[in-house]
Length: 313
Image (cartoon, rainbow, N blue to C red; front, side, top):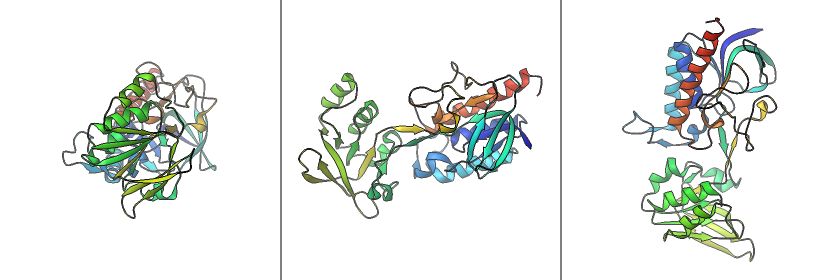
């Protein structure tokens, strides 16, 4: 069976940054890309907030460049999906992983960078216009809708926070809440209600996103009266939560109630020795490419120090 010094699961900014640092530390990392090579950024057209790109960069090219940088130092990037893991509980223990349900490999250290997936409504019109005005990240994409009218779907703290963020740059924000109340904390609700250019529509759901190539409007339905109405918008933000991609680690790695991996203090250490977590899989607070990259660097340094402490390095 193949034995790897450092196995990195996931290929977003966290996974590739971990690979760059691990490769330079001679850990000969192997990255498995997962189902979405390049992670969430591959669905983002413009990345304008990553330091070092004064003109901005589009998500997919940025991920290709990160991959090339990791490979330049000797990282091996493999297309494949880790479907099962068996993580050792002992310091110096060997972890095993199964790729695509078939190939078994052993690893001295594992860096989990499997990310989180935004939850969408699942409407065909919404999926078709992803990247054409439908976004799951107001902080990432709000800027492109400066001075325009947009809508946001969601009722929790994140939705309320994103609505007030958008209200600062857009002329009008229509917030669609499925029930007759918001789930958000009272403080966040007050903030929304005190922002003059946010209109909250309760008992309202998206019926259809309008537009061929780009978002041009929204057809909404009141779920109490079944009344249907339309508004012109150029951007639709979905803020109904994220799902961390942690199913295969359940029962072995400590997680919070939402399924995010819990790491020790300021480190990337998990409850299993030699297993580290970086990026959105352990960060539900910030969820930015630059913070994911930062924790990827930390995970590689933690892995290198761990191997050093075993005298194996």
